[in-house]
Length: 359
Image (cartoon, rainbow, N blue to C red; front, side):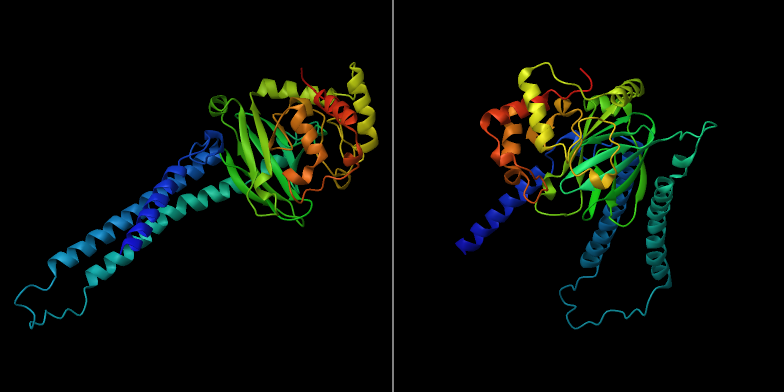
């Protein structure tokens, strides 16, 4: 008996902890704080479906309690046979029609939203100069990092997506190795990234909600893709239109420069010998996507994370370079990093931290 009570106490404690932990998290990583039209519609559908489910639970529970109380066997009626009722056409109609109505209430807005968010025809519209009017981003998922290409602007970034607020951003999504899934919880999604076809979608980032989140949202891979699936994150900077245009202009005009710091200069030479075959350091990357084997590092010094998960400082950067497998098992980081001396690592880290497009 005592053992059973102990088990029930543990069960109660774990149930309460689960309930408490379910409310933990950050607003920029929650579907319950929508920050765009798509996310808001998805949130409204969740609320609608929850209300319908609660209504059904209450109705069924009420009917059950009424039946238990009203029609229970009373003392003295043990041998009495209750009136045999063959059926009620009214009740049969009621419990058939009500579920149909509830399904329609849920199905109509769901189907409407599905077709609305699947409409990407505007991404192909062009002006009189033959230029595409919409902003299009090609998303390529890799083990375990993300690439974002702005094809019309000929700009490529790695691990960090930058978008304007209050306008539709169209995405063409694919994978280079295995199936992944593109998801920005607070803004909308998610969409599978496949190796054999390109999926398309659009999102809109609300300016006011972006300001509340300091213009930074987090994206994740939502499809189990390997041992480091949980670490396959990316950052989303949602900027007002004018700031986004300035960022894009800076990216388009950025060129590789020789750093003034002698340590960074030495690091640049080390980078060219060991890293340049996979990484690029200019936003404009003319290589075909098959040759882009690792994230573009043009603005590495401006990022907020190393490898998407570590604090952005030279110590963590050197830790990552020395042993990437320790932090992201199964990643494709290769090279002769283990042969670099401590001094060479310091120089390489100094150079990478100096890579900035905007001061």
